[in-house]
Image (cartoon, rainbow, N blue to C red; front, side):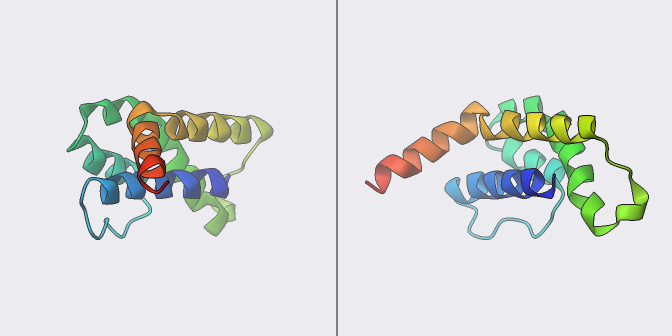
Length: 102
């Protein structure tokens, strides 16, 4: 689950860099990063719930006694991670970067 969270943290920070933020915020809070991304595109509010859930999962491996994780939790984390990965503003920026590097 931590990998789902980490990948999405990188997507959000990459989006901010793609929008000209030279140094994205040094935080692991996906909700905060999502809010920063929403400064450029209001659609980011659509993934705020996914960011909130994944932020909890990103912290859990560091403090395993605070949250018990079940199989359903892992499936939900993967679902939210895919939602963020496939989120159109992020996917569009990834395509643009890929095309510019060809």
